[in-house]
Image (cartoon, rainbow, N blue to C red):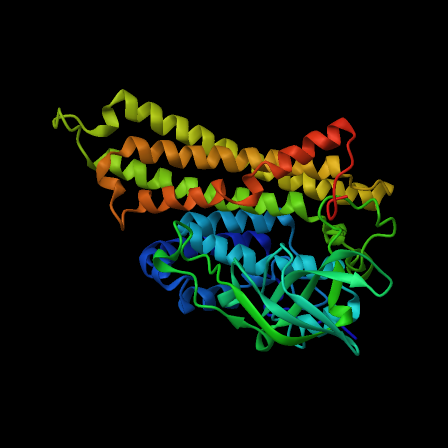
Length: 411
């Protein structure tokens, strides 16, 4: 079976990043409506579809462009600058083609990427649902919350607990189902969440859905490739070490890109405020000439620059580790992955702090609904409560350094 054709042969990474920057004004203009809707507009979706964004990380074998991780991250930064929640929605719908191409058997990849390679897939990593063994697979039922990007997805990637035929402790697995086998619940958008209201983080409901056995894979690919001495289905099929697909560090890089873009958006809004508003008690002086505002703006700029640099550095390290495996056969260890995670996490923290300091310095007027700085402040709080920023990962980093075994599925 030959490769599927690319929709736009000759498309370059530079062109794609330029297209992402060109989409920013439309995303910016539609922020309010997109938040109320719970996802970006059909107009934005059609642009993303037509201009190649959903295929950035998809293998060439299946009609993708197989661009680098860094190309993807830079595109996410641009889109998130236009609308942070829109960037989140896109990121979590477009990135899981990498996961499928890394870890599913080639037969399953052919079936799921389909005849035209149109594959967009939200994912939830926490196991839930019920799984009944039948001939050839499982009957799956359950509700999977926070499936970011699902309104624009063609597929859903979920997680569950399965017992082996021989008994023993249940194992966490991932599975993929096409759109016709699940329901998207109307539980996202508008005031249903504090922030990232257009991220399309609806719940997914499966009711007696059949999933073939070869559409399940073990969920042991978060931290280490030490159990994969021969690589993955993806490295063997596609010949690209990117498809080693160790996930925890990479997922954090994606968040670094989203929140770097958010901080750029907040800086843009704050600069406009400095250039157009006067000091409250001395209206002859523009805010841009006030030392406190200058210092705040400069500090936030510095933290945003640091967020971008850390996110790009972590992304490059993520790829270097995979290339090292391909070149030397040296596996990616949990310590390696947690290094990627910790660098990108610091990028996220710098970006969030930049937004928070700008919001606090801007004055009470930006606290009103509809003000963009208020939106961006609420958006970064969604990272503050996300599992990526919680104690789990620092704890694991400490455990690895101390030589204490990690629990499943991270071991």
